[in-house]
Image (cartoon, rainbow, N blue to C red; front, side):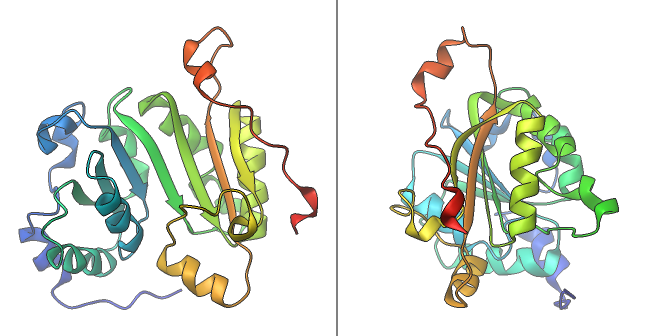
Length: 235
C-alpha cells in the first residue's frame, strides 16, 4: 500500500516534544526519560497512534513508547497527542524496527504490542515479519522475565506463521484466539484503526500473546495460568 507523503511532517516531528530524537542514548535509561520507575510498554508499528494513546490514557501508572517508521503516519499520532496534553506517560520514536536492540536494554521493557503488522507475504521476505524468529530473538533480549508480546491481525496466513514461529523459537503461548471479538479475551480489548475497519468488513481478528519460555524452576512462571487450548473450529 502506497503511503501518502504529508509535506512538512519531518519538520513538525523534529521539533515535537512528544518525539524522542536521540533514542539510542536512552538505552537502559528510559525510566530517567519518564522521570519514574513505572513499567514500560512499547508498540512497534503504531500507525496513527489511536491504540497507544488509548492505552496510555487508561493506564496512567504505565509508561508507553510508540514506534513508527514513517513520518507522515507518525505525524497523525503527534497531532492526536497534542489534543490530549493530560496524557503525560507517552513518547514516540520514529525509527525502523530493525534497530530495536539498540534502543532498549536487558529487562527494560515489560511488554510489546504488535498490531496489524505488515504481513510481508512473499516467502523471501519472511524474516522481515515482526513475529519472525529473527525479531523474537531481539525482543527476548530486552523483555523483562515474564514479559509478553501481544500480536493482533486479520491476516490468517500471517497469524499461523506467527504461532509456528513462536513455538519453533521456544516461546510460550499465553493466550491465543482466532476470533478475538467473540472470545473470552474480548473484554477490555482496545481496538486499533485497522481493527475497527477490518472487523466492520466482517473479518475475524486473531490475537496471540506469547512470552519467552523460562526454565520451569523460574518463579516468574508460577504467576501465569496455563493458556486455554485454542479452538481449531474458530475459523
